[in-house]
Length: 109
Image (cartoon, rainbow, N blue to C red; front, side, top):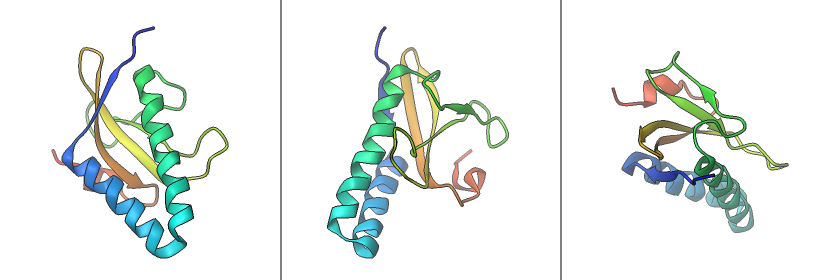
Protein backbone atom coordinates (compact mmCIF):
# COMPACT_ATOMS: atom_id res chain seq x y z
CA UNK A 1 0.00 0.00 0.00
CA UNK A 2 1.35 3.42 -0.98
CA UNK A 3 1.57 6.02 1.72
CA UNK A 4 -0.20 9.28 1.19
CA UNK A 5 1.63 12.57 1.69
CA UNK A 6 0.04 14.67 4.45
CA UNK A 7 0.52 18.44 4.29
CA UNK A 8 -0.57 20.91 6.96
CA UNK A 9 -1.79 24.30 5.85
CA UNK A 10 -0.53 27.34 7.74
CA UNK A 11 -3.87 27.48 9.60
CA UNK A 12 -3.55 23.82 10.62
CA UNK A 13 0.02 24.34 11.84
CA UNK A 14 -1.13 27.36 13.88
CA UNK A 15 -4.02 25.31 15.28
CA UNK A 16 -1.62 22.54 16.33
CA UNK A 17 0.71 24.96 18.11
CA UNK A 18 -2.21 26.77 19.76
CA UNK A 19 -3.79 23.55 21.00
CA UNK A 20 -0.54 22.40 22.57
CA UNK A 21 0.13 25.82 24.13
CA UNK A 22 -3.41 25.96 25.59
CA UNK A 23 -3.10 22.39 26.90
CA UNK A 24 0.23 23.20 28.56
CA UNK A 25 -1.15 26.35 30.20
CA UNK A 26 -4.28 24.62 31.46
CA UNK A 27 -3.16 21.06 32.16
CA UNK A 28 0.65 21.15 32.37
CA UNK A 29 3.63 20.12 30.30
CA UNK A 30 3.12 16.38 30.72
CA UNK A 31 -0.44 16.52 29.38
CA UNK A 32 0.67 18.79 26.52
CA UNK A 33 3.26 16.19 25.54
CA UNK A 34 0.66 13.41 25.71
CA UNK A 35 -1.77 15.38 23.57
CA UNK A 36 0.98 16.13 21.06
CA UNK A 37 1.31 12.38 20.60
CA UNK A 38 -2.48 12.04 20.22
CA UNK A 39 -2.60 14.69 17.50
CA UNK A 40 0.43 13.28 15.70
CA UNK A 41 -1.05 9.77 15.80
CA UNK A 42 -4.21 11.03 14.08
CA UNK A 43 -2.15 12.83 11.42
CA UNK A 44 -0.05 9.69 10.92
CA UNK A 45 -3.24 7.69 10.34
CA UNK A 46 -3.93 9.91 7.33
CA UNK A 47 -0.87 8.47 5.57
CA UNK A 48 -3.26 5.55 4.85
CA UNK A 49 -5.37 7.91 2.75
CA UNK A 50 -8.90 9.28 2.91
CA UNK A 51 -10.34 5.81 3.50
CA UNK A 52 -8.43 5.38 6.79
CA UNK A 53 -10.43 4.00 9.69
CA UNK A 54 -12.60 6.68 11.29
CA UNK A 55 -12.58 9.16 8.40
CA UNK A 56 -15.98 10.71 7.69
CA UNK A 57 -17.04 12.56 4.58
CA UNK A 58 -18.48 15.93 5.63
CA UNK A 59 -20.20 17.46 2.63
CA UNK A 60 -22.48 19.12 5.20
CA UNK A 61 -19.66 21.52 6.08
CA UNK A 62 -18.06 21.90 2.66
CA UNK A 63 -17.48 20.28 -0.69
CA UNK A 64 -14.84 17.57 -0.50
CA UNK A 65 -14.30 18.02 3.26
CA UNK A 66 -13.43 15.03 5.43
CA UNK A 67 -12.77 14.74 9.16
CA UNK A 68 -10.97 12.39 11.48
CA UNK A 69 -11.55 12.62 15.23
CA UNK A 70 -8.30 12.40 17.21
CA UNK A 71 -9.83 10.18 19.92
CA UNK A 72 -8.62 6.78 18.72
CA UNK A 73 -6.50 3.80 19.70
CA UNK A 74 -7.35 4.24 23.37
CA UNK A 75 -6.39 7.92 23.37
CA UNK A 76 -8.78 10.64 24.42
CA UNK A 77 -9.15 13.91 22.58
CA UNK A 78 -11.65 16.58 21.61
CA UNK A 79 -10.38 17.69 18.21
CA UNK A 80 -11.09 16.93 14.58
CA UNK A 81 -8.53 16.86 11.81
CA UNK A 82 -10.34 18.64 8.97
CA UNK A 83 -8.90 17.85 5.54
CA UNK A 84 -9.44 17.31 1.84
CA UNK A 85 -7.72 15.34 -0.86
CA UNK A 86 -5.31 17.82 -2.46
CA UNK A 87 -4.05 15.79 -5.38
CA UNK A 88 -2.79 12.36 -6.26
CA UNK A 89 -1.86 10.64 -3.00
CA UNK A 90 -1.91 14.02 -1.16
CA UNK A 91 -3.99 15.03 1.84
CA UNK A 92 -4.18 18.70 2.79
CA UNK A 93 -4.98 19.22 6.47
CA UNK A 94 -6.98 22.43 6.59
CA UNK A 95 -7.59 22.81 10.32
CA UNK A 96 -7.42 21.09 13.70
CA UNK A 97 -10.63 22.13 15.44
CA UNK A 98 -12.27 21.38 18.78
CA UNK A 99 -15.29 19.12 18.44
CA UNK A 100 -17.54 21.71 20.13
CA UNK A 101 -16.86 24.26 17.36
CA UNK A 102 -19.04 24.98 14.37
CA UNK A 103 -16.53 23.48 11.93
CA UNK A 104 -17.93 25.11 8.80
CA UNK A 105 -17.53 28.61 10.22
CA UNK A 106 -13.79 28.03 10.68
CA UNK A 107 -13.07 26.98 7.10
CA UNK A 108 -12.13 29.39 4.35
CA UNK A 109 -14.17 29.07 1.21
